[in-house]
Length: 525
Image (cartoon, rainbow, N blue to C red):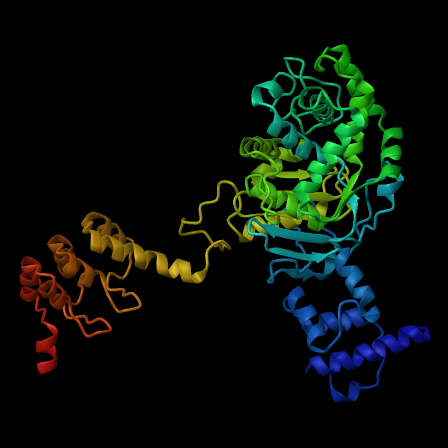
């Protein structure tokens, strides 16, 4: 052990002694050969360590995450293996505080997209998550400011731009909407000689042609690129976004398969009249060579979740119909060959790329982006991004077909506060009582609700029914629900007082027959 490692472990030994009762005072001054083992021994429960507790222990002792003595631990957490199987655990304490780190899973992921130098150099331990709500609330953790290439993510944005300028019928002449069920790079078209959908390689090339020849036929090709780039910038709300020329050159050199698809489509007369193949390919590859960050893509995802209106600038970037169409396509085709499995397991519109980024949209709620370079070699999908999304949908009702009203649901709706959940049934019941809807009140009673529940002023359903003169509701509450006819509000008023005050003689008689007494009689007692 060298001197640097010795000093590190002695310092961390003092940290362990301050935070654990399992180590004796006699251990002071000893060198812990493996600090990670000692830390697990101190914090483990049932063979696992709670990630939130781990970092909280550091922070309580004034040790920050960027402390060089913790570099090994932080790297290990960042490089945690996340296989594409149902039993994988997400080890980063990203958004769900009760996630646990399983010690055997501390192995390194290293397979990254290496077709061009710019992606081959990516750090396999990098991991970032950024979230943006439709109200502009943002949260990020990890490597969320690191730039990476958009690559095929740009296809979704290009389609949204084209659809905002063109009618759906104009685009359907040239591109389908069906999942292909084939390899994204395969030379294949649908029965009408169209790319199957805009989110595979051939579809992205076709969208580039439509933008050049149908959206802006009057502009030079350089001006079309400027228009696309500036439109993307509007979607970011001023967040970091740029073009990487070196990546464009490298991508162009490695794009033989894409050129083959383009020539095949030209042979099959798929392009709009006047389209120039090389110019279309340039625009397509230029869009793939734009760079962004996790935080920026979270804002773009939130823009889609918000119906095309950027939550930060409140500017309409995409038209509503365009957003509806692209989210539908992202739900069914956004992850290429893995789209069906993702729709089944996660159930949210998403778009992935080979750089390890995954952009997910929760319509009318939020958008988020996960970036981690290690990818599944078959689907070119971020392993950590997939695992994170599976964890999110297991905790929150974000799956497209979730029904949080089911009694067996254990998911928490983050869009509803505890106050709303408690107040809503009370407000609904009191409204029904005031409006005299006895049948609807019966449904509340049969669901097990306490029919004597009161609002802030102590007013119950019986008070309101009596005040409004709804005799049927008053009888139902007393005879069926067992409501107390002498319940008082904050002013000491009983339901009979309300009936008398508002001249509801028949209701007053019902209450009196049930043993109800006015305030004066109560005070005399």
